[in-house]
Image 1: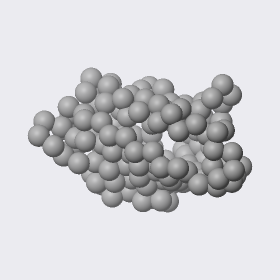
Image 2: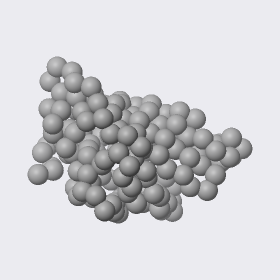
Image 3: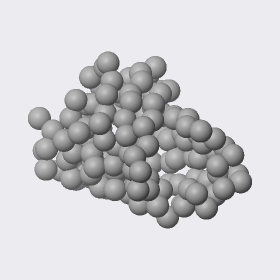
Image 4: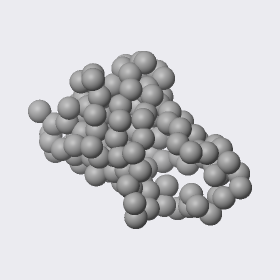
Length: 145
């Protein structure tokens, strides 16, 4: 299962990038990925962060491994949890007046293959869209110092 979503953010690339990569502020603006903990202050290749999100009623704790960070271009991270693996690539592209951020998340594993109904595409699309909308709000409104 692949879910792709994009959002236009009316802020400069530096602000969007800083908002996205500064882990110390995620709990201030991010309503999807909560209780973020990392020994690092920002996203970097090889980094790890632990967090919680609620795809359904109950919270799910996950460990996200940051595979690659190409400054001002892309971030790739992945997570695995009981029969499910997810890999998400975020692309950052300048456009006149702002930045377009695109998320492309791929889900694999036995839960997707055999029990796809347990991972409803519509719900996962909503979570990704909400994450991108939270990023937009934070970057445009200067919510991160």
